Image (cartoon, rainbow, N blue to C red; front, side):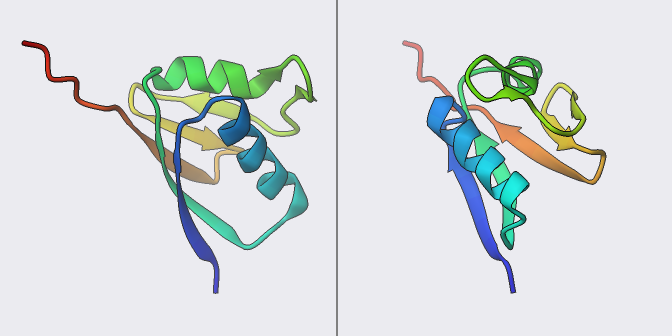
Length: 84
């Protein structure tokens, strides 16, 4: 049985956590990503990591989701700012 995880912040640490789980084959089911950036920017940052090198699979994005190797689509959630 896999553990379901939502990543709150897909910055350096969130992306490294996702990548380690992806490459390590751990039984972790990522269900959502919460970040202030749009999905296209997050896909680019994941695909072209300047420290770890390129992501070992395909990375695609839509306006509100990320997909890796075409297998799973992870919704990207955006915080709602209360502008007054």
